[in-house]
Image (tube, rainbow, N blue to C red; front, side, top):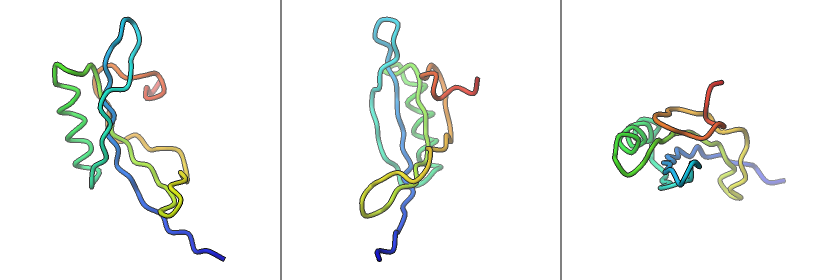
Length: 86
């Protein structure tokens, strides 16, 4: 029986507007939650993107399979509905 090890990934996703749609722009992985939140804030304030989010994702370290729903750490600007609190 294999012992499962997990890893927490800190992901930043920026968004651009194409017509009336929000589309994924730059996606990066950061080392810590604070780094991810800081980068998302910088990207959201840049003229290149209309919004950004930072989230953490727990995954099986061997297979990469996600273990649970991502947890939103930060959002700013225009982001897709799945990241809204409504």
